Amino acid sequence: MIEDLRRLEEDALAAILAAVDADELEQIRVRYLGRREGLVSGLLRRLGSLAPSDRPAAGAEANRVKKAVAAALEGRLEQVSATEVHGGGDPDLTLPPRRKWRGTIHPVSRVIDDIWAIFRSLGFTRARGPEVDSEWYNFVALNTPLDHPAADEQDTLYLGRGLLLRSHTSPVQIRTMELYPPPIRIIAPGMVYRRDTYDATHTPAFAQIEGLVVDEGVTFVDFKATLAEFARRFWGPGTRVRFRPSFFPFTEPSAEVDVKRVIVREDGTEEETDWIEIMGAGMVDPAVLENVGYDSERYTGWAFGMGPARVALLRHGVRDLRLFYENDMRFLAQFA
Ligand code: DAH
Image (cartoon, helix red, strand yellow):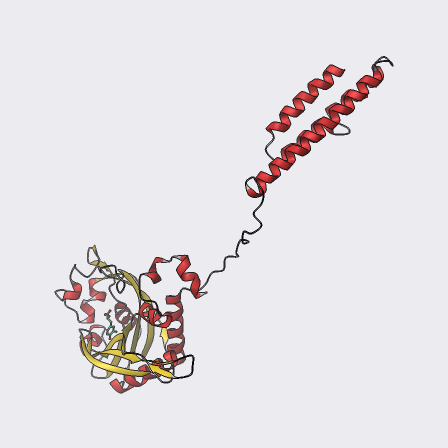
């Protein structure tokens, strides 16, 4: 009996040493020390079959084994739970707790949302088109011949068989006018692609927002007034807007639009920024209207294309456009 007890003790200690977690130790405790089914209790139940003179020694040995196994269990439990919680050693109470992860709207998306909200309140609807488009929609229908520099392989990412990654959101003008008769008042945000250098002011994929209005009697004055209203709502009442003559194949006349903002310093004094270009724009070329089957004698329109990432740069005083497209969370988390 005493030998049996010692063998049990040896087995139990070996199992305890090999155990890796609290669950396993609990199973070992039940197996050896469990009151009903435990192996030590099982042996003790045979105590009555021993000669009365052998019983005290066997009983004492059984108690010693019980205590030894219980102590070994406790010691090992301390070891494995230390490993489970903090990889061994003492916990470092100075460590910060794990932060809750909260998503935020990307700063470029937020600019798009804010611009869209203003135009929506002015009666515009939202439109979109595919990022993979054809030469017809991206260039030809927009009055841009395929031998124009913009259509060159140096600038545009061609996919073969007349398909390409759209180089601007202007093809959405064509797609919208093909689907709907005038009046048209749309805002079309989306990603565009160019074979560009990758530097602080250029990225090969970037967001654009297209605007288009077509109706009877629409003039450049409507355009200037709408743009001025937009700029003042977006950048503040003191904002000034300037139109510089420019050229785009799909507008005549064409303009580049600059804004000059008023910044209020902390001491209350005001400061005007430099003129900053925000968009290309113009009156829709009659040839474009004819390409979608609109009567260019009856209808006129204006359009613009704007870069929301550049607007986000201004808004946040960021100098490098790439930061907005690399999605490094250390950068983006600032805009929470
Ligand atoms: N599509 C032009 C570009 O990507 C921007 C532009 C200029 C859009 C004039 C227009 C516009 O709608 O009228 O550079």
